[in-house]
Length: 363
DNA sequence: TAGGCCATCTGGTCCT
DNA sequence: AGGACCAGATGGCCTA
Image 1: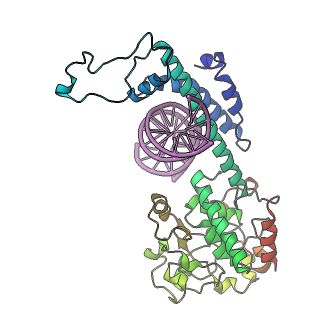
Image 2 (image 1 turned 60 degrees about the horizontal axis):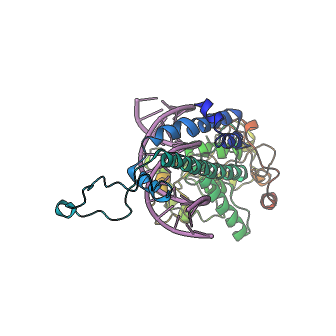
Image 3 (image 1 turned 90 degrees about the vertical axis):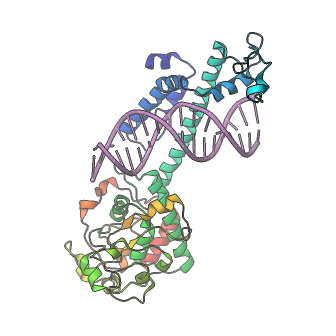
């Protein structure tokens, strides 16, 4: 197969072009993609050519006029032509022409070209997605966000930033993190939490749920999240625990955060073993456009839940740390659920909006 | 082994 | 007419 590929000058440039299509990809991925490209340019398309449908063959017939002289048309169904109206209606549309070897060859070339274009298109799309991965609040080389998670996180991030700009207030840490993680899977939530130096273990515990503590008065309209906390139906977070007056409570935010976070700078957060009051739990999708939506995507995201702590991290503040630690308490990181720190990229070089955000949190 | 994620092929449709 | 875009199908890889 490879020999055919490299002997085919029309295919070779594509393979070379895409051997390094994504700069951000590691070598393993590159070779993987190379292999796939090589394979699909040869074996894949070759094999699948055999299963091409009749309609495509018919389509091929329409374009080639130079072969008309050799095979004008074939009346495969009613070749005799005189009694077709008796049994079945006469077929309309372009008459089918027999596939000559030349047509087959041209068809293959056209299909290969189309496949190449499609591959290019998808590579461009992936490239853009990689760029997006680099500008959302967390980025890990070893634990790359999936496409769908990247889009979800980006959407949440945009909305969070919009809320900050709209309100002009320093957002509540927990609300911010919750906003970022709306509808994200647990692994992604952990990744984001790790990137934001949060403690996923502390985000929600029985103690907190049972205490039914107070909510922080975050800047984000968390009441707009229509989905229930997954824990509400669990013994850890019984419905109706604590106050019901807060919109978060009404919609499934079932634990206290304010009790410890409101007193920003509480020393107890300095302990790595801190297991104190926790932050709200939330579940479901980000609601900006989701309300009333019944799309499969939303329903799929609906099953995700978010269980992690909105406790400020103790690492040096990067753009994604947002400086929470400066005004709030700090905590150590439990690392079992988060990727190694060195794998994560905090985007120091990123957009000025980060400076703005930092300014918010450092006020 | 099932499920998630991904890359690719493929045919249809729309646009330029 | 050719290319872009899209969605379905397929198969590979990885992980819990």
